[in-house]
Amino acid sequence: MIKAGIIGFGYMGHFHYEKAKKFDDVEVVAALDNNEEKLSEAKELGMRTYDSIDEFLKEDMDLVVIATPNQWHAKFAIAAMKAGKNVLCEKPATMSVKEIEDVIAVSKETGKFFTVHQQRRFDEDYRALCQVIRSGEIGNVTTVESKVLGERGVCFGWRGDPESGGGMLYDWGVHLIDQMLQLYPDEKVVSVYARIMSILTPAVDDSFEINMKLSNDVCIKVTVTTFALEKLPRWFVFGDRGTLRIENIMSTEGRARRIKGDVRGFDSVVGKKNLGPSRTMAPLKPEYLEEIPIPKQEDMSMEYWNNLVDTLRGKASLHVTTDQILRQMKIVEASFKSAELNEVIKGEI
Ligand SMILES: NC(=O)c1ccc[n+]([C@@H]2O[C@H](COP(=O)([O-])OP(=O)(O)OC[C@H]3O[C@@H](n4cnc5c(N)ncnc54)[C@H](O)[C@@H]3O)[C@@H](O)[C@H]2O)c1
Image (cartoon, rainbow, N blue to C red; front, side, top):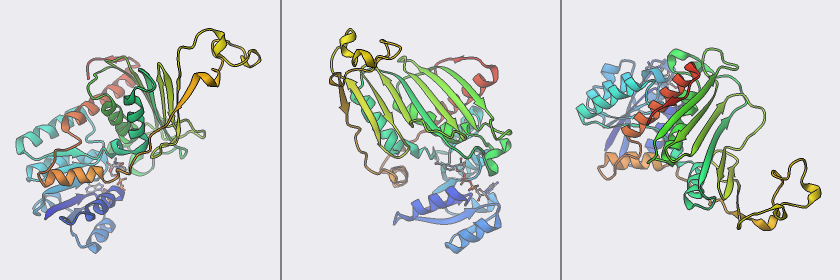
């Protein structure tokens, strides 16, 4: 049996408990939380419960899942690995590059793995996007825009507290940065420019925009806000032969179109009376365009946990590695720095 324990039995603690339950050879034996109610919930599910990390880590466990607010991730990860446990940590891995470097050093020293729950790599919308881009059907991509917009306008609970690691860059930001780095894993990020804003939650960032330029000249734009009362597509991609839009997260609804051949002169645009104020920007005649189907995607919502358990069984290697997470945290840090200085941060990340 693979024995696991959970630190932080809130929303994501329960999520991981449910995932673990799907495996016959995984048993969640213990939980640690600083909230009595959460500990009672864990006890009812048959776990031994703790309010002290030292006592919790005396349990015989192969895996510790960390699902607390963000400021505790590094501290608990280091303690767990030093106690001989592998670690699955919720995102963001840590709150700084220095912290992730310390965590990686302990992972190397102890031989215990540290991985992060970047499960949005397996979302349908993202996999469809990767498939269309990699097929070359829309030509060479020049810009990829990734947007997540909400309406509530506030970051509630610990998400609105800077000391707990609140704010949207540590929240959705790390998922969206991870997706972009995985889309182009062999390219370097050569510049980062970010605006980070507090629109309705003064203490933390509730909105941000990050522009990254990659070494292949692709421009990446990531936008998150908790307050937008109109929708924009989840993904918008410009290629030099076509354009792709995907409307929503976890869905492949959208449209991809490409031009059939060379479009020259004004004969290719729709009739003169439809040109509007600009011939340059006039729409193409439909016969110059072809639609590219957006491929449907299978449900891969168990992929992250399947890979985790296979790794624990010694049959796979981890999808989410420390090298990838270190890179991601460097982008997060460059974004904070860029926003603070209102400067483009250049380098090779
Ligand atoms: N991967 C994802 O899609 C995803 C989605 C949501 C949240 N998360 C991440 O999961 C983590 C938890 O988020 P959540 O929404 O489950 O929060 P939550 O508030 O629902 O749960 C956090 C739990 O941690 C406990 N806790 C707080 N401080 C503690 C401490 N010092 N020691 C022990 N327990 C402590 C709380 O009592 C609570 O039970 C965060 O890091 C968040 O970014 C990831």
